[in-house]
Amino acid sequence: TTLRVTARARRKILRGLTLWLVVWLLACRVAPGRACPKLCVCYDTPMTVSCQSQNFTSVPVGVPYDSQRVFLQNNRIIELRADSFGFETQVLWLYSNNISWIEAGAFSNLRVLEELDLGDNPSLRRLDGGAFRGLERLQSLHMHRCGLTELPADLFHKLYSLQFLYLQENQLSHLPDGLFSDLVNLTHLFLHGNRIRTLSENAFRGLVNLDRLLLHDNRIRQVHRRAFRDLGRLTILYLFDNQLRELPGQTLRDTANVQFLRLNGNPWGCGCEARTLWEFFRGARVSSSEVTCTSPAPRKDQDLRFLREMDFALCPLPDPGSLAGTTTTTFSTKTRWWFSKGKPAVSSKGAFHKSGEAVKAFPFASVKNVHPVAAAAAAAASNLASKYEPMAEEAALPKLEPEEYWANYGNEDSALVRCFELECPPADESPVLPSSSSSSTSFFSFFSLLSLSMLALSLHLLFG
Image (tube, helix red, strand yellow):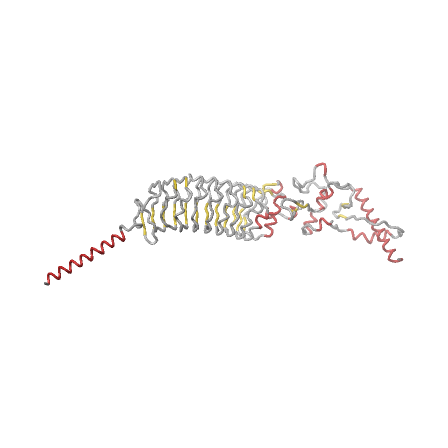
């Protein structure tokens, strides 16, 4: 009896062990979704499938559905079709392959994908508009060094969660209007090392949360004055090593929070076209690289940021009511020819005294009954004419420090007066300055009129 009980107990124990062995094999070996693809290595916690550097020419089959990370880099995958991915994952690396075509909707099954790396695929020259359809949770997209020559305007449609976009070192020459308009959460945009030539008004529309914009090492020649109007949160802007000769000051004023600005390596023109950019630097508190002038010749190799207000004295100021119009405002002591151009030769501009002090002439009423003591009145009034009084056009001009103003005063007939191509008077319309003799005659005529006027006023007050 004892032997029979012992045999039954052994059989029960053996059956139990066999059952547990079957359960373990089913759970760990043959359970669907947990098998590892051939030539790949799989890891748990988090579930990772690594198939890198195995010479795959297509996405391998058998990737577990619940894989959180899938690494397929450094293979020879040629194309990505709509049925290439049948698993949920958060990180997918496909960089350094031979991908030349991505079918529209190729990633549409990857609904929880957060990071997609397609970098270093030099044969990927173009993309279909729906290539990234369905990736509404995508946060980081890498497409650097892919040989891309153009981007469809709807490529990033509905990628509302995207925060990092890497497009550097491609062959892009143009950014379609509204390309980034759905990327309301984008913070980093890398576009350096392309062939971009212009930045249009709507190139960066919608990027209201962008923090960093890298545009260096392109071929940018022109930036629309409102190109950065949505970039109010931008803190880093790189535009160095381009072909910019000018940059509207309004462009940078739209980036009110920029902290690091790099503009070096551009052929900056520092004539009148640079005035608004110079004014931006006067009021901005930003860490900036040098802005080296290449023209005009007198300013070559100078830093635009450190030019003086006098350097732009001859320049017209922008008309705030017009995008293109300008209002002529200049310092008359150096550019009187501008105000007199097209006017009759006889004007009440007054005469220049050779000492460097100018006298403003103005019309007087005719004087009758002049008293013989006019000479005494003239002597008393001569002190009133010792300082130049600006005309109405000049009163509204930016003020100079007295020493800076007078240091350049009275040099209108000197060859040392600096002017630029568009501001210098034509050779046949050079400012006409009175000769020494005519200046002296006008000077004494003025005081004669002044003394007669004062005498008449005194007689009127005394005798009613």
